[in-house]
Length: 486
Image 1 (cartoon, helix red, strand yellow):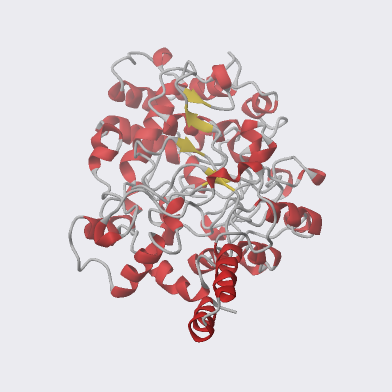
Image 2 (cartoon, rainbow, N blue to C red; image 1 turned 135 degrees about the vertical axis):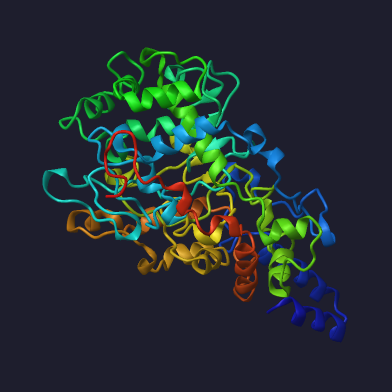
């Protein structure tokens, strides 16, 4: 029985008992989970009834528009440093087998992602949704376990937590000022967490390093040797020092580089970060223009979606601030697909934030994704489980039901029999699905199905038109002479 009918009963019958029933229904359907289960201890970050700040048109929590001052270097990075970073980003010289670049999974022609649920990393062939798994002994060994996140607005200083599980995070207690899987081996002098992030795909056999038997970098990565004299980062640095064109570029970008031997992996990482930070800001979306006072910037449907987002649907509880993320971690009943992270039953589960903190209460929690240009960045979720904006928004109307009735056609990845066989190992196990569902902190029905079109329309208003054509970010050639395109 819905609340309107209950209220009518109260008015018509005038019974105190009916009022009690109304209160009971409100407590049961609006503020408790659909299954009435007791909360986990870590559910203290459940959405509160209200956000603290009032914004435009009475909507709570509406942020200020994103401005250049919100970015590193006031969004003005040294040109020579950006040029160097651009070339490094697209150059396969950074990979063990020299067959994959940072851009392969974060390409300007694929909206700084790759369009796949889970990437086909080292050994793959092609770009974007056309990428294949390679052939023979050189083929991809496994899918990358998590979706390749887009890089829009990553130069904003608020962006202090990187990766789905937050394993790169600003931390003043560390010598480098950054917490990472490398611990105290992370070199000092990195400009920010974005520069630290650039170092870690280089160390992954599946992403860029290659396998132990294939090249020295792959061997070092397999042995966990990142910072040693024969470690991953030093071997890559030696490649760059041996390239005369790169030496000239590093000298132009850095005052402390006079000769090849002065080049370090920190110089390379900082240059890549400067390129990423300066290339894809998102300051000029219709939403930003509305926040600056242009009341015509949003359509009626987009405004309706904004009111829902910052109001009854309570999306902004987690998707807050100018980047529309609290950069915190939440379990939202997201389907688990792909090879997993080597934990749980048969190693195909992904425990998310728990893998960083070691706390079982953080199991299945993943970082709230920023939503700048979200309409361009499908598929969605840590496992790329939802291929359209409509599908991921609909998930929020009934997270556990969506998990249990997951439409596998949403999973987008090149097919190979051995990989296909494990893609849904977790989803085919009812007990594991129950565990993911039990960790969910969202409530069913806060966002309703009839709300979805308006919320989707609002999310599309977060698209900066300056980010629709990124061809100018792609160099025609790189100093190594390796092909830019696969």
